[in-house]
Length: 103
Length: 115
Image (cartoon, rainbow over all chains, first blue to last red):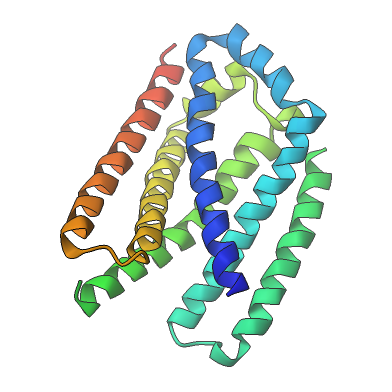
């Protein structure tokens, strides 16, 4: 149930982010000055910190989606609970590594 | 919905998810990890998108992510046990939203490379 809820909630969050991303990219249409001044806001520490939430959401949704696909094909059925916790751990570790690499 | 159709939809969701692992990784690396301070300047964004391979990959990413998102929303809403007549309206609405999303993204990219 936890895996189901996390997958659904991360999915809804990522759909919301997709539209937010497309709206923000609209700034590019306003030309170089508008975009480059907008980048200063996006590079602020608070916005960069929110990238960690985004990265974790993408990773857990992707890894758990891979787990669900394997289970859907009838493989690793006895391991589904272990695979969920493995996905969660890998997502957390990659988020930390990803943020360290980006800063 | 019959079983074979729901199975095809599930396979499409899984296949688009697998494709997204590759396309999102490429998008993230190209747009954030290879850019100074995590984001490209206007000149860099335009130069990147003007490359035919980059343009193709970004549009493919847009199409696949929109498809995967619409199928995901559909799965969540179908769990609410909608009546069959509402399911058809839901499918039409999601097709419409998905196509509008892709067209919006496409014209955005097109305008950026032609500014």
